[in-house]
Image (cartoon, rainbow, N blue to C red; front, side, top):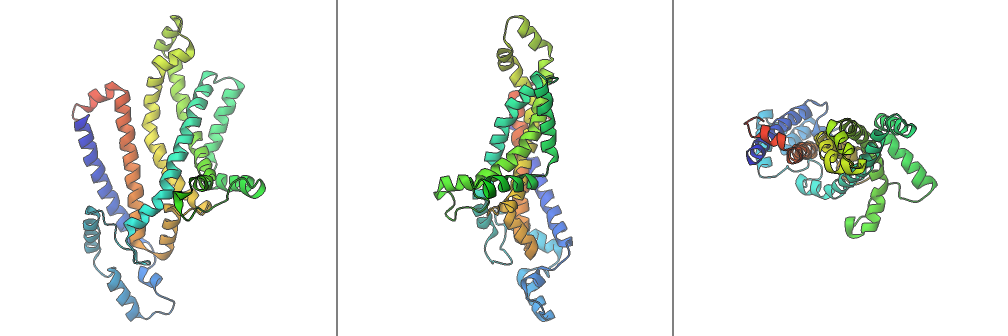
Length: 321
């Protein structure tokens, strides 16, 4: 496993470098000039040129990229054009909202998807099996922001059980208030993610239920729950774990979108404001952090898959990536 982890870590670093270069170039291709965004209407060409020199946008793209890459090597994401504050600490402050939202939503989606997926696979031709399958397909098709607005309308505006948006100013110093503020966003993301995971769990459980080894265990007197627990669960987990990394990354991205719906001070609102202001260092910092989170989620999923299935460890040791 150690050689495999070393190779994957190098591949992750190379992927992050390539993604950073692509993001850097694509941002510079967007219409608009950050110098114009920082100045008021009617600024003179001299003022615009002075701001460009101040923020460094007048330098060649290669020089700008190498300078930014050098700062990233020492974990410096640069300084915001607008607030003139370091981007790294500001992102860290926003992660206090985004990371708990992502992890809570992912945990809830797992707690819902695993049992529901097994139930749907146990009786796929029954009425409740067909109903669960149909509901999961519907959940995948519905946009996440629409579910968020629906939940806010029902549970906040009409029932007044939960706040419709915002987050406590003292963050997690008041855990009850923080959890109440995250309840609807977590439910929004978890509903969409669990709908997708149910389909994967159902498919994996169907393969295990139709397997010869499970039928043999049942013929030897083992109950269905016991046979699934002793023989089927580990085999069903292998294909599911392979998509958990992608689902965790999707949960993170979905949380960023939902933050805008519920006015949460996370990475989502930070990214939207940075795009409106052409604040390149903030945009680059948030996107790099998001890319790193996606790559780490994939690495964790692949590692967990090899821990569960020894056959994958054997193939991983043969020198292949």
